Length: 132
Image (cartoon, rainbow, N blue to C red; front, side):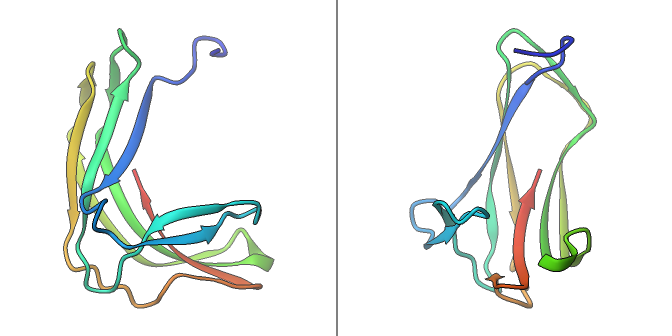
């Protein structure tokens, strides 16, 4: 149900190109109640895939462009407001326009140089995020 006409206008999913051959890692979620299976990438790997955008049937979506970002972050648990971004790679995938049918847009980050490995500790978390 939408509030005042605002609601879900589309779904956005990211699928990695080597989904079947990609090594996976089991990681606890933030509440430590369940495990997530996440793709494992190493320094120098190419990260590629598709961004799938599907508007609600019968609706059109106006957008200001489609962009995907690969971000490496260090977050200190005692200071949640402060994060250090040590890696930011951006790809503009689509110019501003309208979308009235599902669309799949490819992306690629060639030979990503990851200085650090992901880490979840008592006081700090180091992670990589693909944000669209």
